Amino acid sequence: MSKLKLLILIALIIGLGFSVYYLAFARRAWDGQSRFTVISVSDGVRVASFDPRTAEGIKIIFPPNWMIGGTGGKGEWLADKVGRADLVAENLGILYTTSQSDMDWRDRWLWWGWGRKVKWQEVEAEQWMKKERTVDGAEVWRLRETWDTAAREMLASRAVAEERLMVTVVNMTDEPGLAVRVARRIENSGLRVVATQTGEGGIQGCQVRSSKQSKSKIGVRLMVRSLGCSWGEAEVGENEVELFFGQR
Picture 1 (tube, rainbow, N blue to C red):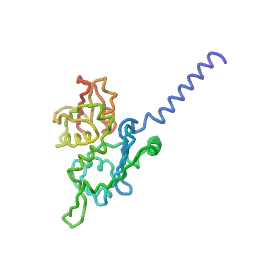
Picture 2: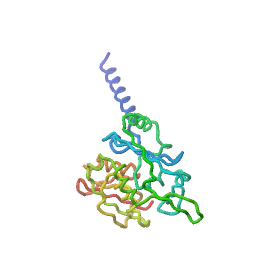
Picture 3: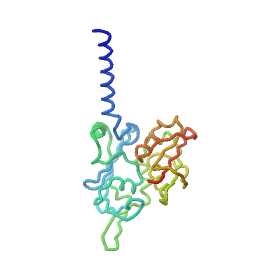
Picture 4: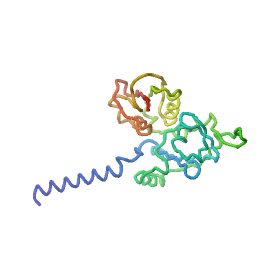
């Protein structure tokens, strides 16, 4: 074989390797290090999550007629009727990887493979809920305040918590309470919020800012991916992160 043909063959092998990596891993929703959390809303509401650090998983089953708030707390809906994983996550105050219906084949393959090795525990969510009656007499379930403590124990990511990142959440929109709601979600996922603030500026959408050295940290990438943010460099300490929400 000539040297030119050998170089071409090596180039093709390398190119094939990169293609396989891209298809199998580069565009997947799960990063392989933080928690893999899936919300199902197709046949009742369920949250399944495992931590790759501990190989322990939890499956949480929610009762029918669970009443949740709409986006930004506007309106109320029955979670098993509205069928929206994003609203379920917002009401639970958690970050999630994907919904059961939106999981692509890469993540389904990883979920299946890991699921065989994980030690699963199944729990009923009613222990963190209470029954109430609506004005028209219908019986519904609502979350108790004790849920957040349980969520941090069950759904925080070990790898994220170990990084000890300190997050400041800044609301630059005209939506009141946004920073507090976001802070709840990221704290329940293992991050530490040190401040919530309001501000003004021309930021569009969501942006995570950290030092260049911290760009690859698991917690930083988790916020970028789960909240749909961009990343920007900031002159802050290695364990300090700023999370900005601008007009959408």
